Amino acid sequence: MVLKFKKIAVKIGSNVLTQKDGTLDIPRIEKLVTQIAQLHKAGLEIILISSGAVAAGKSQLKVSKKIDPISARQLFSAVGQVTLMNHYHRLFSEHGIFCGQVLTTKENFGSRRHYLNQKNCMSEMLAHNVIPIVNENDTISVTELMFTDNDELSGLIATMMGMEALIILSNIDGIYNGNPEDKNSQVIETVEANKNLSQYIQTGKSSFGRGGMLTKTTIARKVADEGIHVFIANGKKDNILLDLVNKEKHVICTQFIANRKEVSSVKKWIAHSDGFAKGEVHVNAGARKALTGNKATSVLFVGITEILGEFEKDDIVKIIDENGKQLGVGKTQYDNKKATQLIGKKGQRPLVHYDYLYLD
Ligand code: GLU
Image (cartoon, rainbow, N blue to C red; front, side):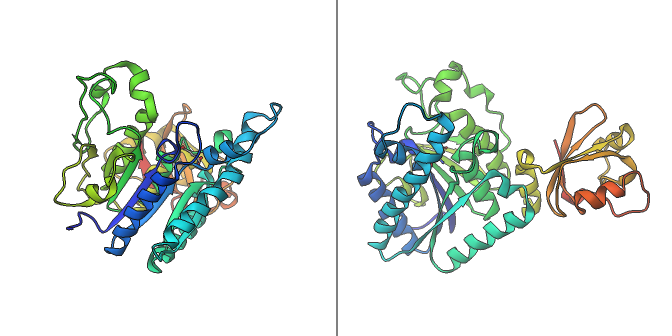
């Protein structure tokens, strides 16, 4: 088999991993693991982003009605994550492959230190032929601290690890140009870089929203714009992974063609980190004009009016203008204490250098 890629991230959704009654679909997981093992042996680097923890816990534990939904999710994920990893461990072992668990939270992407720690951990795993299996740490990520879903997480992981492709496995063949249940609808097979997708949302939110297609599309677009090919495909189809990476096969799915422009990894991280910013830097009208003008401009202390939140050097901060509007995000060169002391001062190193600034 001629492989299309050398490094891929594969996201498997809960709806692929579970049966109608909510229990884990072990034969399905086994089939996916067998394919991943085959690709791993062929020399492909693979990172798995697997959902299914909450679903697995829920199908095993009977809980009292008194428990609130947040506590229930925490409880189910704690129990289900163990079950899930047990299956992966057993199934990969049958192929003589080690897998390892990486649990993360949104907060871990806002701090450069945590970000690099995660990256280093996964790089070591790959270097030692271990397959990383990533999931959100649902036991502590609750409400506003959560990722939108594992699609968002998979996009971040693919970007962070410099993967060539991200395969998002769901229970439908891809994005349709109409209601997926309508016989006349067809899968949109390719979406070019920088393409606005609103034209595809023709049949109202409900059909498009099934299986979270709207978030999938947003994430896919963003990731593809950063140079990574994204596929949205049906994880319930036999041999789906083998066929997708095989140069000689054609698979019905939606592919977002990667933008060929090179983007630095720090810029990618910053671009993705909007929701994870640790602090806010408020600037005056003069600074806003300079930043939004044609020349590349750094965020200087003379234009800063206020600094909010606690952050360390190299963390992500939001840049807010005098009207409270967010201008963008950037990597700070100071912690919040030092930065606050320098507000209004001239002749200092900028708070955010323009190389590390991502404007909206
Ligand atoms: N992290 C959740 C789980 O493992 C899934 C989140 C999602 O489905 O997007 O159950």
